[in-house]
Length: 267
Image (cartoon, rainbow, N blue to C red; front, side, top):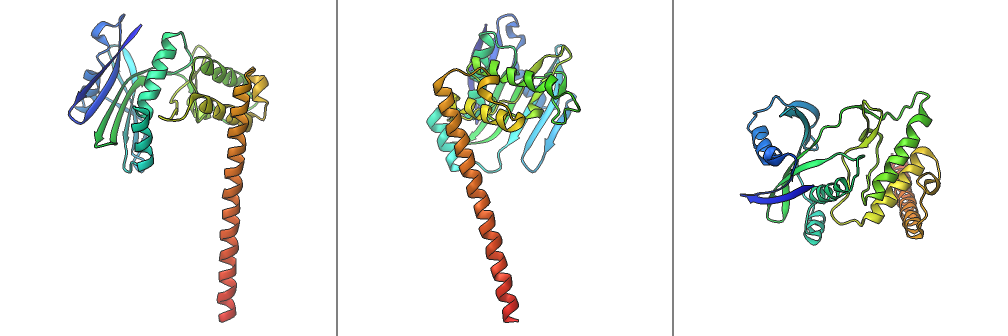
């Protein structure tokens, strides 16, 4: 059973877990400070300077951790309003939902130990996340003849995730890790601060339909009428957005063609 602690330190707001079986060994604020001071031989796992997103692997106390560092160059007013209304950020919501699911016995999701956010006014400018480092191989979109071996466990993975009140919300192959024990585990959930879980789960089912061309109701054993209604709502919403996007693209192309024709006639 884990206790959730919270503190403010200057501009930083920090929430972290303390497991009883770890005692103060799960002193994640101290681990974060040591990382920021360069006290670990951190191994870069993902670096994207344009987006301001960085992931490193560190090892301490015989355990490996994934440390995510996010620099928000532009914080939209809409996103700030959502976070104020919800009472917590996207990362904090994932932290709390994941902690609750793991306490209930969920073993298919990456554990999150700490979320630290630096705020300026109502805007979050910098984020650190310390999470479990999941050893294994990424589920590749090129199945190389192993399609049935992997897609069905991936669907079952999402189904179990949903049973604990979680959702991937933006399901990707690269977010599924096949562990050395040949088990599937999902990392990097994308549950937003304001979207209802039912909508997030419906997005997962739509993604399953798109990726694997299967009936998500059958494969995920969905019986709830509410879940099916949300699925069709999200599905047709995506269809409408795609139609609008393609129509705009065609109109721009047609407008460009007309301008070129006018230029040629003038010459």
